[in-house]
Image (cartoon, rainbow, N blue to C red):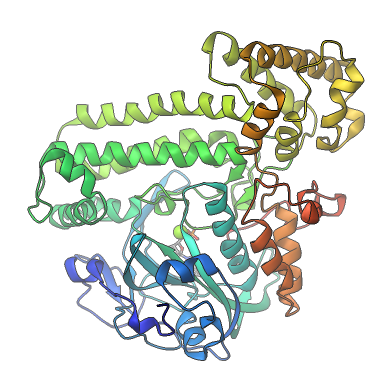
Length: 542
Ligand code: AMP
Ligand code: MG
């Protein structure tokens, strides 16, 4: 029976129970040593109002589908009511930001309520983002604004439905408070509406949680955190070693195998990002989940025209460290930071290095397979397909080609008929080009040549067109949270109209389905959005 009261959930706060707490309970910005977290209460807000809830998550927790109408739920989701059984706290972590060690960071505006044991999805942690200052807020206010909260809420749910490993979002709500933000760091701060997202994941442990203990030489706590993480979340790994989870510290092999598992999950996440055209924007090590989940939706973006050098993050505009094409390498660099952090538990370079190499070998196996799937090939035949894929990736950036539309339209190519002229061959793809004029001369010739190669390959693969089309449409989404769509939802939400937020949440639940009634959400970026802030570029200021 679904329940109406969050207090009735099976709260089981293992993180705060098993790991050391900050002894000081004063909520003041400071360095926190020898502790994994600080207990802290969310800051009450003026007028909490619910914007949207994800019904799948209510279901996951066994909560009543109508709970959103319940004032005590809205108060809890904005940090205005203490829920019995929770143990609110902010985690201490560090991180490498844009390639440099940044010292202590921590949950500066996220407050974890606690963990719930769910019937089907195991342990799930609930965390409020934007719920007020913590000891880790550094110079900032601990708050989040409506635009970034809508972006996180919609995108994390969209990613889940796309089959990309991600943290989830249970709710998004207005706080009723105003928040000052200088959106483009150009000295023109303005008041914006404050909001809170309740996000959900098995845990919010990041690479940076390990890095902070290692950087401080606090090896005891490093080991405690690793043992806790492995015993709580990587039980199968202990089973495979025949190790009793209550019996840490574990052997070196266990730590190494665990690291290799984190690397594996990270590969799978990155390959999924590359498949759907997602650019995280801030792949600092404090934004890397130990579960291989996409975490911390900030200045992320979706590729519109296929441009591997693109990043939505204006803070990174000159270096483009976190551009689309660099994500696989950056993840590996981040894993290397994690390897360094846990080195004191292993004290041997070789096994960690070999686990790191397994990231590269797995990526080199998974990525071509994923590309072959996008092309609808029955299998990946390196002899022929390597150059087919490379040829396409060289071609796509040469004209502004919408990535999502291109792959969806490629599925329509008719490979069965014998004779087909160039115009017929190109016809299904035309809509994918931002500037149809660009599909002329050399580029047109090269595209036609590639398409002919592609047809030939598909024909020899022996998969009938209809079967190939179905397979392609199950990995190439029709609907993604295009940057301009999120912005349209935000524009309306800022005026108090949340209908588009709900509609997008709904459409994005079935991103691979045709949904002809929602065709307009599959349209490529309109011209007005080309340069509009929020649509093409974003800052970290959220
Ligand atoms: P991010 O780049 O968003 O992952 O944030 C990096 C660090 O800055 C983390 O420690 C965040 O908790 C902190 N942070 C970001 N925004 C705020 C804010 N408005 N108030 C307090 N801390 C923040
Ligand atoms: Mg972060």
